[in-house]
Length: 114
View 1 (cartoon, helix red, strand yellow):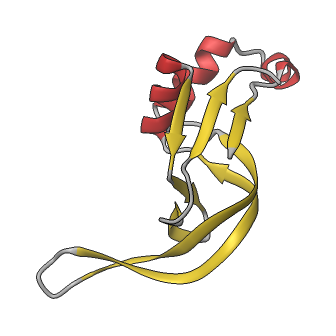
View 2 (cartoon, rainbow, N blue to C red):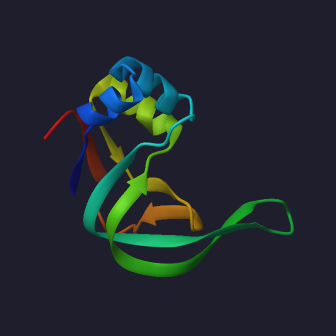
């Protein structure tokens, strides 16, 4: 699965902001960037702490996801430094974690326009 991150010129113009400033905001977690995927095998769930203080994933949904997935700030930083990144973890507002299922390949995210 491949996804391209597009920085839309009309957004940059409307906000009167440079592409470099937009990237800076995303890298510093002040703005979330997303990619659109189609049919990616995903697991969504919550994270709870075990009795000994270790985080434990509690999955509550396994689906083939189509739609937007938010990038973590650390991944945005890496993406704009290297031009591409393979991701298995994303942010979503409705779950503590969103992960590409183990049997599936990570999502290759490329920077740049289509």
